[in-house]
Image (cartoon, rainbow, N blue to C red; front, side, top):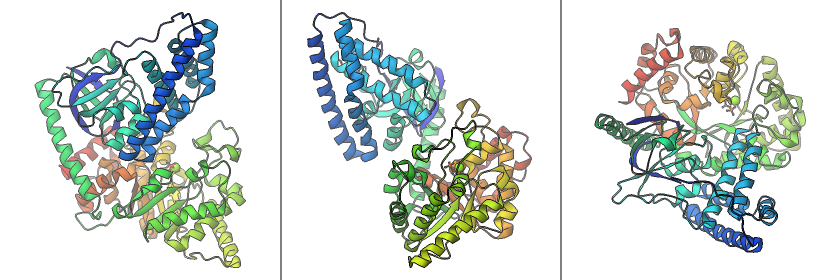
Length: 576
Ligand code: PEP
Ligand code: MG
């Protein structure tokens, strides 16, 4: 038995027989050829074949999953048509008289070195698409089918194992047999992981030395939630796993059912469960029947999708569409939160040594009144089509709140003068995501209509650990008692001032923390759409008053692990 630990990519437990991709694969060898023209012709034929395959994968995925997932294969077609990249390879064929598969491999190696220099993790991961396209092309040139071992006869289920899986591998695999994915490479935003989540296939990525530990035909169990896998488990390990899987299947069925129910705790406390949205995909798939509204509309996606500032009209149309889709349920629109890890070329933002501590979010909006004004006018214009609210990010002082509200007032005055309707009683709230805003939350609460805790940033600022830096993710910890105390301070101050407080960072859907949110009187949790069912499921089994008692010692825990253990114990008592 070998225990493996990776990064949980897509949740769920799976068991199956390992089918290893590229078992025994070697890179193409440097082969000298006689006739470059013939080799170039071979390349074009292979490219045409791959183009057709990608087209049919696109159509198949579009039917089954939708535009976003299918888009991966369009992206691969674009890479396949890259005349510069493949032109370099063909030039190598002519000049060095080498086989085209070797030439492509060489160009891929050069590109890999260039991509490795890129700081942006997302862009770095996109290299895997180039790698995939090259690999598939080389497979076609060599007339072998992606090097998958054949599936053992009578296999009840298959776990695909690979250094790296391509989206095509995932889509092509017989779904009746495919139980899980296990890869050595790949991050949590890789396309394979996105697809696995969409297909509901448990996946683990980033398992070190995977290929040396699994062979074709081995029995593998995996838990995509915890990132744990086991090869050839003992009987005892298998028994435990089957028990965990049974419980998980039961819970998942419960989450599905809970999705359409109201989130009311056992002692009658209603918590609104909203969704975070903003990107095109989540806007398109918004379903008002499974949530209480939108708790965080990240408007920066709208700006990122444009080559220049979106106009007031363009913005207003998008906000109006969301307000109408929500059918009277609240829609909290956050004003532009650019800077930090989100950059916009056309804004010409300065290079900064500490972008997360620099020119970002409300700081930029207050510094660029025309940009802010266009957005506020657009939000106000949409406010007559639903329950639209405004939310300001990254607040550190009362001055900023007053300046932001003054900007709203100016926009209102203009619209009034122009005879354009808007909701003059529109609610204006702020995000609590800086330590400064925590410490003055009593003052802030008296000056705004609501708070929403942005824990993603709050954790990074409270624990002084960059949320993007994987070296210090053990410090960036939602259970650090300083973080929990900060949230309690905010909840208490909001309650004293009589304003509602919500949470829109990722901790809103962290299962072990959900009972705590109910106990602290958090009125709204805004989460990724995939987690609505889970959040409601836990809330409906929680008694806020009892949890408050059970968690009395939480804020005195002396370590994050101690706090986590206590929270886990309480969660186990609630959902088991
Ligand atoms: C947050 O900081 O918790 C938040 C929701 O905002 P973002 O993740 O967009 O910074
Ligand atoms: Mg934030």
